[in-house]
Length: 328
Image 1 (tube, rainbow, N blue to C red):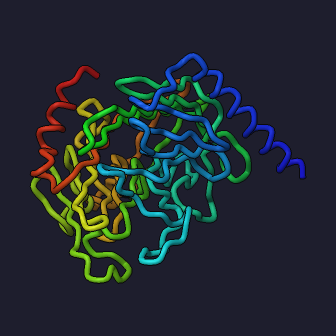
Image 2 (cartoon, rainbow, N blue to C red; image 1 turned 30 degrees about the vertical axis):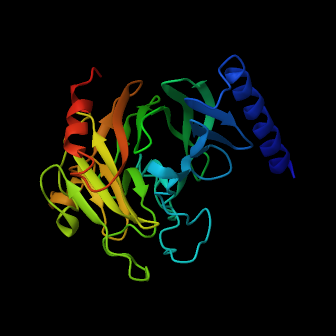
């Protein structure tokens, strides 16, 4: 009963707090509007739902649903919702999220025995606007025993773009406490998407004859050859409701170990992971460990580009070049 009351009070406080942040901002349907709801923020672009940011009630924070060009849903519904015609594997694949499978030995990726959870702490800034919308939040990474492993700050900026594309930036800063923070060598992570059930190259379920999707990387590799390879960007495209749409993740040139490795699967998982060198390249265990000294921080920056058509029709390479040329 105490937990239920605490959760309710926290939810009410968050809605009131975010409403206060947005009180003096524009309320028209044009541009990017961020609207507080119970346990999540609703993000609209020109009056249409783009995504919901869920920050309460689960073991991580995540975006679901995520709508691409034409309002088409580009991420899987499960485990948030069971829908016919989708696979129901990997319940930790929550639409669009960031997590990692080994942070000081704690698994924040899957629901393993040594699990942890990422808990929303507070919002630092929430803004609507004509050209873009912004969500900045602080979060705590906590072990199953209740120990604080680290903190992070995340910045999500979504842009008001033409109807045939959606564009947003996702930045995360790990902050170590009094002890070193070790981001461990594992393939399980990190900047991740689970694509819509009709999009995978080799789905784990019957898609009713829908043509397979495709995976393409900046290094020229495609489909099954892309797992564990290094590339500046990776694009995953396929059919959604009869139309070809794609999602590209761009690895910022300033990121540690750029260009990143890709934990991308033909069944629909799609993740940038700069840590899993033992798995991706067969190096000795621990080769991918990255340590943040006590009291220091480490930042990763990504851009996610949702588009119509395949990677050539959407000029993914050109859009990455624009991103890489921008001031950090």
